[in-house]
Image 1: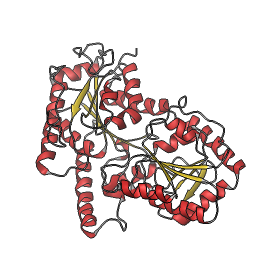
Image 2: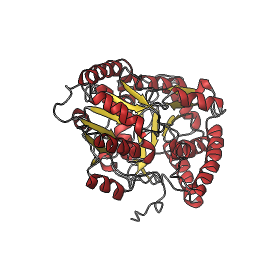
Image 3: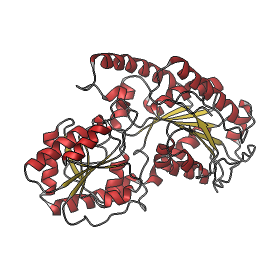
Length: 439
């Protein structure tokens, strides 16, 4: 099998073929969910019980991201009576682990940063093929690229209902600083225009809903005419499992300041290192830790740079970690100096763990932290202000503890994964006009 990126088209897993259903049958099922769909054998190593309810297809660009951010929603939808299927790239990390979840899994190949016209057209064509083969009642797209491509495919195949989830504005909309050359800035300007026009077309159907994660993004989308306010649903990101991420006492010894994210410049990694270097020069006793891996994103921090910082001793780089509850348990302060976010999951997890937060006063981050309550907000791209805020909390253990306690209270009130699942399931139910029978 050719495993080169872009070499394998998006394909349905032929081990478990699915007979297409005509559109009028889908409409009948939406009105009368007691009329069953045909049963589909589950893919992967799990033992997912296939529902007789409306078929819900999740389409996501990364298996690992789906597992960490959307799998609880898929399980909630299955419990609610939906026949859940998942389509993700087969050649990325986390595919085998996601297969173990037991849902019918449909492998696809999609270049997250791809721009080759032929390969991109082939990806859209294969999405059209997939939607025709599966004939879902609802498709839930995750990520901007699949929102655009998948909405077009759904329109061609007349998928009855579409939910589009955009977690953030992405590299095209956020990176415009000194690291972006003239040619890249010009290309992104063109890409922004194309993306806005495509999104306007994608979100024009009354049978679609757009899930956004903060009020600023919602207001921007409405002001730009991309989507009407009535078609937008707000959720606090993917939510957080309040049982997995529980409060712990703040650790003793040398304080640990953690930035956990993909190692991207626009996550504020450079400013974090700048702040760490400044605080070390002041004689502040603390450890500064980067947690996360590099990425195919053009804004990715080179591994050589991360290794050089670690060798210098200014920060520690722990790489990718799967035990985030344990990582946050070791943290005295959680820091995310991002330039813009949807709703950062790491801040929801930090709040659930009762950790004080230092983050930037930008969309997404300020939706999780109120300045002076759960943590501190500082201007984006300002390493000096970041250093001062971190130093302020390092010098006051009692304030760190009170902010962490306030963060946990807010997490319990607003950030639970059950809250996000409820809002999303209500969106599905409203779109298909019927509520599937609960199990």
